[in-house]
Amino acid sequence: MGFDQFTERKAVAGFALFDSTYTPGAGMTFWPSLQDPSRVDQIIGINGDVVDHVISVTDVAGFGEPIGFVTIHAGAGHGSVAAVDVLAGLIPSVSQQFLLVLLGGGLTADCLVAPTVAGKVSLRAQGGQF
Image 1 (cartoon, one colour):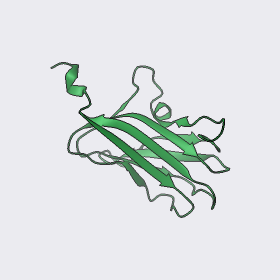
Image 2 (cartoon, rainbow, N blue to C red):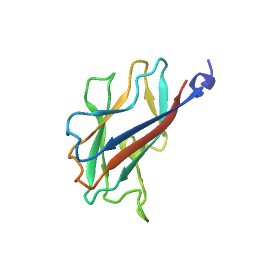
Image 3 (cartoon, rainbow, N blue to C red):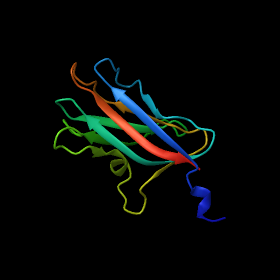
Image 4 (tube, one colour):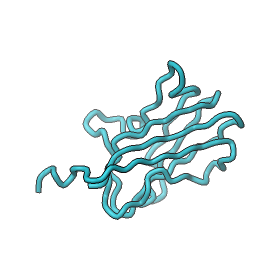
């Protein structure tokens, strides 16, 4: 077996949007449970709100405990403020730049405090099945 077993064969993208109607603790699936294992190569956080927001990411195939927490600063991804590399915040390692999601797994996110009426926080993920 070579590394070709980890070659992405089908692109996958995920998205979550938190607005003022979101109930903290409810969790939102942004990476679906797939029929094959998958690899998340990038998760970007954008914050159109006037306050920072903390996002937790959980693998639903795990024990229900978050993989980690990432702060998405106010205005991230708008104007001259860079979007936040959420994946790098979850896995602060130069040797691993991806997240494996096993068969039956999936990723949910929780915005610990709902955005203000005019604000929105979003996550955009991309990767693939292998």
